[in-house]
Structures are given as C-alpha cells and as structure tokens.
Image (cartoon, rainbow, N blue to C red):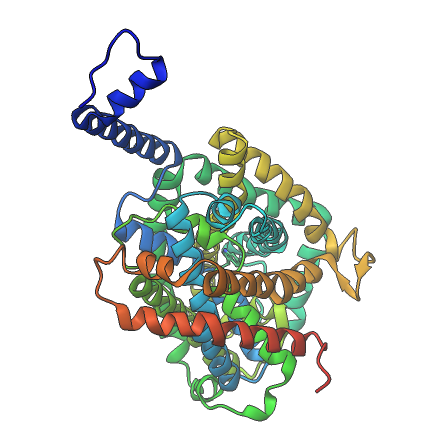
Length: 494
Ligand code: TRP
C-alpha cells in the first residue's frame, strides 16, 4: 500500500485514501446510512398508510363510491341488465385490474405523486411519460366537478328525506323535487361546496390520520347499511323480477357504445387510469402483496356494486318503475320506490347516508392527487395544497353545478358541462391514461423491474401470476383498450 508523503498532491492523497480498504468501507457505510436517513426523512415528510390493512381499506375506500351506488345501477338499468354486468366484469378483469396493479406498483416503487412517479420511472428524461400524470390531474378536476355535485345532491337528499319533503310514490312529484333542487343555482352551489369543505377538512389531517382513519370507519358502516337496505328490498313481493333483470343476460342489448361504457365504468370503478392509484400506491407499505390485495379490492368493489343493484332493482321492479331512467334513477325513481314500501322513509334516509359515506372515501382519493402533486413538486404545505385544490375544484365544479340552471344553455358537443365532464373523463381520459400506463409498464419499463416490484424483490413466490400479468399487460389490455375506444368513439370503419 503506498504511503502518503509531503510530495503527494491533494488528488493523489485522496486516491491513496480511497484505496485503503478500511477507509473505503467506512465511507460506504456512511453513505448508505445517510441514504437510509434520507429515505426515512422523505417517508416521514410524505406520510404513508400506517398498516397493511389500512392501505387495503383506504384503497377500497377509493374504489367504492358513487360509481357503485349511482353509476353502476343507472348504467346497468339503461344498458339492459345482466349482459352489461358481464361485459363490465370482463373489462374489469382484462383492463381495469391490470391498470390498477400497474399504478399501485409504480407509485410504491417511486414513492412520489402521479407526475413525479412517471418522471422518476421514465427510462430517459426525453420520454415525456409525465404527461400521463398531468392528464390524470386534469381528469381529477373534471371528475370532481360532477362527482362533488352528485355528492351534494346526496347530502341534500339526506336532509330532505329526513324532513319527508321528497317522499312520494308518484315519480312526477319526486322528479319535480329533483328539478327544484338542480335548477336552483344557490342550492346546487351550497351543497357542492359543503361537500368540498368536508373533503378538504379530512385531507388536511394527512394520509394516515385523515384518509386512513376516515375510510376505516366508513367502509364497515357502508356494508352494514347496504345489507339492511338489501334485506328490505329483497323481501318485497315481486322482487324476483329485479333479480331476473340483474342475473339473466340478454346480449341483444349490447352495442359498441355499451361496451365502451362498460370499459369506462371499469376504470371509473377501480379509480384507475388517472393517477389516483399511483398516489395511493405511493403510500402502500413495502411488504404488501400487490396482485393479491388488488384482486381482493376488485372483488369487494364488485360485491358492493351487486349489493347496490340488489338494493335498487328488486324494489324498482316490484313497484313497476322504469329501470332505464338514467342518471336521475337515484334521485327520482329511488325516492318513489322507497315511498311505496313499508318503513320506506327510514330506509331512504339510510340509503342516502350510505351513498354519502361511499362518496366520501372516493372523493378524498380524487382530491389527494393534486394535493400530493402541489405538496411535493411545489413544496406547499399540506394544508395550503388542500385549500388551494379545493378552491380550484369549487371553481371548475361550479360550472357543473350550474349546468341545470344558470348555465343550462351553455353546451359543447351537444352536452351540458356536467355531462361533458363525465363523458370526457370516463370515456376518453381514463381509458387513454390506462392505455398509456399499460404501454409504459408492458413495453418501456422492463420485465425485470415489473417482476421485482410485484414479487416484493423476490420475497413472494408468485412467478406464475406475474408471468400471466406480463402477457395481459403487453398484449391483451392495450389491444382491447384501443379497439373498444376507437369503436366506441366511432373512429373505426366497422
Ligand atoms: N372509484 C370511485 C367510484 O366508483 C370514483 C373515483 C375515485 C375515481 N377516484 C377515482 C374514478 C379516480 C376515476 C379515477 O365512485
């Protein structure tokens, strides 16, 4: 080993020192420990779900929402029942779930917000994968714009059903009550902004104390309420007709647009295609089994949708109402249905409470996407990020809230703003975001990294599942997505 003498230049001295094995080891140990502390520091700053179960429940809380209680029933009703449910389930398995797995995996690997994650994981700075994250943030605003409005109606209906104002067996009366609500600009804004304020208050508390703690309380409550309403609905005389509608398929009702709608619903339901799952994945503990737990979440979510269908359709058919009423099914048909049954007034209050409960977990996950982004990329405090995001959503959302009153005549592509936000986000942005995600994971990120991420760096013995996943993500999901999207948007010649 060379000795250090006075004649050595500083560079030479450094070189000699670095060659010394003891010093080299010391330097390495120090570097590693400072990297560890850095990791711990960022983890502490970022926040994460405290437990595996908490991560599971919070993520389920994002998936379960008005998608199950409002969208799934009205779309199923409008698209012919069982056949639509089958196509929706297939879309979930072949496209929605693979995208959800991909997002959670990427988020957990990068431990960053939706845009930051894509920047970190991109194989080269030149490839603009961050656009997926940016599209997601845009989608978050669009979805929240109409979602918070529907949640506002739900909240209004809790109070209105408590006071008995909307209880009538005649759809004319209940539809007038609904029109009165949505055509009143101040009422619409009031309920929407109230909803946004509640969501903001939860999110200010942080990932574990806000999101995780809230969803842990809400999800069990949701199941209990759903089962109560189900028992009431299924014990009505004539409930069988509704069961037949839900479980006997008639494929003649399925059109290209219905398939695109089912695909859009699959994304919407699993909160996939826009970075919500990336953001939540970045809070998942390292030891969670991603494929297994996402499958659990997917089936629980499907189960909630079926429970909601069982609460609604037997009652709708038992009293001879129209299942294909569209988005107003929940607010016009359902109150009339409940008014027709014994104890209907109580069941209706419970029903709208459960809808509000479901909506809350979903909305906090949507709003968390821009909050995490502002918080990390711009180093704004959590409270400031939450307030700023909420104000922006309130502004965009107002155009949806007023789309049945002050802005009723303002239409684009034949849709008012409410319908436009819904259509563009569910049928274009989410599938497009999902398509880019599977292309990234299947073709650009690298199979080795996918394998390492999904097996928790080799600790899980799930090679077969990962192999199947790789094939689905490379070939099946992207092709299906592309064909269904182009066909549904009328861009294919057949
Ligand atoms: N999945 C929720 C529902 O079914 C809605 C939702 C929450 C969502 N986060 C999302 C939809 C992100 C699309 C993207 O109600």
